[in-house]
Length: 192
Image (cartoon, helix red, strand yellow):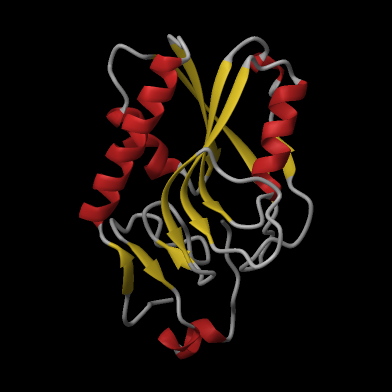
């Protein structure tokens, strides 16, 4: 698999700026609510780069505990295909302030499931932060509290987001077009 031409949606400089801006918004929220310790729960695998950069951009005096959770709703498709399945124990977040960090907010089903599970587990407060909030034609299950970008419904990859399990290492976020390669148009599977 080799994508011949990459159409960049957001370049690395723009991503860095957006992450720093959202980190300031989160810092203001934390400060105004008297939160001194924040649990950052990032959704594996797609949010890995975003979560790492976001953590580095948060104030150093904010105590953060970091963990990840796996949530499956895409299977092998390019869009969500079923109810999200949480893979991990979230009971440890009882009486904690939690920030859920994910890569893409599409239908909102995955984020809604995570937020509801955390609230049911007794989390003191729960907020959500996404790298990309995609435009969605229907009624979204939940909106993100913090977001870096809004984008259309096109499939994106790079900066942690994958195309067929690959290209997470790209510094930019790119748009996948079916005509990019003949080889890829025959086998469309992805995970984010």
